[in-house]
Amino acid sequence: MAFFHRLLDEHYSLQLTETLEPYLSSKYLELLGLAKYKSGNFNEDRHLDELIKVSPEFAILTAFRDIEHQFIKIIGLENSKLDYKLQKLHLETFFGDLEQKGFLKENSYQKYNELRALRNKIAHQSELDVANNDLLEKIKFSKQLISTLQKVKSQYKFMPDTNEILPIENKET
Image (cartoon, rainbow, N blue to C red):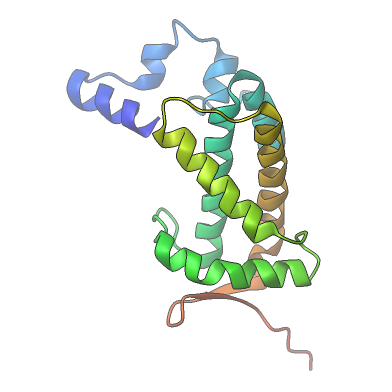
């Protein structure tokens, strides 16, 4: 979407939402993230459920973006991109801690890597040979991971000197 925003703006002085409004209903503009939900009640789970009906591939891209946003909030880099090499170094430990504490099921880090690989395939390949059940399974995992990251955000802190996401120790007096 960002590409189309820039393309229309820089080369044609057009806004994507305004350009698409005559062709798409407000429901689809909301679904694509081009308009605010009129009800004001945005729900990520419901949004992904609706999105998967229209385009499972776009739902995967959106879910992965939402997961990245949760990581960005945890490590305190609002409006920044994650360095994937850096991220990979310490996410396995972070996922292990979440599994040990019962926030995530076993093998979540592996499922996250599978989701990332699928996201990359969708983003970079024109032909995609993935079973719909696999897409649905990945969306289900994504929703669980997003929910978990939202819940634990205040229980972890990012240590920039070691590039780790560590639990905040509760000190009881």
